[in-house]
Length: 312
Image (cartoon, rainbow, N blue to C red; front, side, top):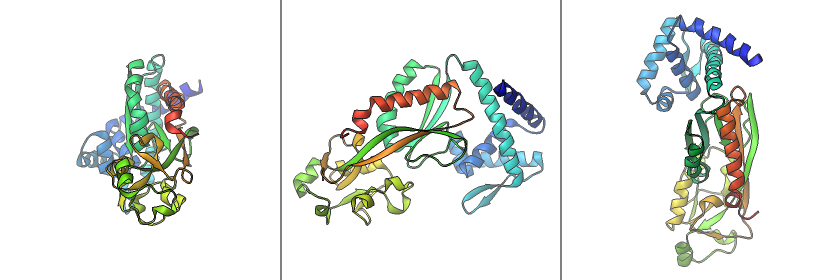
């Protein structure tokens, strides 16, 4: 009953809004306010940034208020923009809830997941066809990038992160631990010899992240194992690092689930463990589509334990 009352209230807000302006303009405004730039919003919506800007300008004209201003860090909400964002988000949640009611038995709809590139491509992506076969009315959008999008600002429905998010109104659970180790290509070791300790890595080519573009402290592997300084070859992409290592470019830390075809080195000294967390906004956590995908993620993590943590 509480949920029904909330939907009626938000629906009333939406009907009043619709008499003043086009809801689709509000949808673009929400996307821009969450993404922080017109370009990022347009990319997520599949339209160009100029169109996003024109539609927001039309909305501001209809409301006779400035909603977004440019700042050094991107777009910033004005006071009027903050009020509209709060109201529009409630209406958006109400519409999603209404759609969900019609799909409750089937558990269908679209779910967007944000996840680190390596875990997303090596673990989640290969199992998506099987999920789709079991749930043909479910659409999955996988954002597997360097960095994370936030369910708190409704950029995504579910996020799998390296640390529990500190933002409010999220339901956060541990998903799984995974292990990382030092790896090199067999050809590289044949050419240079296998190092028996971390100390023996001095003078070797090290592969790792671009120092000033590391987006999470959990990724500072080299500092943790005692290899400070800039890698000889670096990338923001863990998949690119794997390809560099596989091609004989040096030695680097990789998740064990990305180490196929590589040789683990410094076995006695280096074995790191990280934990993955799954989070969802409270307003949508109870919907059938979200519960379906969260449960699938949990089962997938359990089923892939031998891949994620092979040395446990």
